[in-house]
Length: 355
Ligand SMILES: [Zn+2]
Image (tube, rainbow, N blue to C red):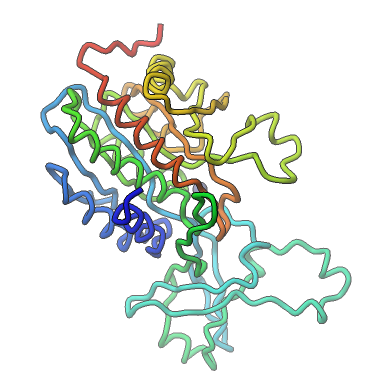
């Protein structure tokens, strides 16, 4: 990965943009898209689009969501502490004791999610699992009035963790779910621009996936694609304490390549094309099974209008929905290449009717 590409990825991760508040990350994504795409814009829902080879056929949508999980301020008490609601699926045990960044109209306000000290907890409290309703944010304000000068009801916040590289080609940060996917779809479109594809390619960074695939639903309706491939992260199961989950998710390892999903949400011919392309390009892939609609944008895309040929390329990720989501940079490159090379093979005559 070149220095510039890695910087683009880091800038995506470092953008504070939970579901419904994606403006900062949209700016980063579109600035990169402007470098090569024929047309770049943001729709009224907040999805950002980049088109390569306009007028080509068929129309292929590549979707990665650029929102992330976070919280939203719902109440400020008399002492100036902020009470919050979750934007997306949180494990409240992880949120406690974290530094946070609150996105306000006037800029970023820093704070922490507090917790009663271990010494002060009763034996019962120590065993009790916290819920989001028990979490408060401390911004150091002396009372409600002072807090109201700093933040407003509805302001969103995320934990204060940015992009960092680890050993062995791994990287850590919050929001790899799914800035990694938004990164891959744009990088794939960039590669496709040089591969003279037949297809018209719409790379889309979708909003609000974490609260119900909301961006992909409207984006797919607007684009009306023939084929749609979602790129999201999936559970790497190669770490301790996975228990029986491995029987369901299969052994998925970091650095062992893209994960291709099989199941009713995936067009079988598109799946076969992805596998075949991986073989010819010598890209290692891992397979998992999903017997229902996946929890990804691929689900919204498939059910658009009269139905869309849908696929899912996933990036293995450890510790999903935590501040320390762990990913392999090599996997990102392999996913990008697989996506670009597969879409480059699609012509107006490619038949995706499954049977
Ligand atoms: Zn997620």
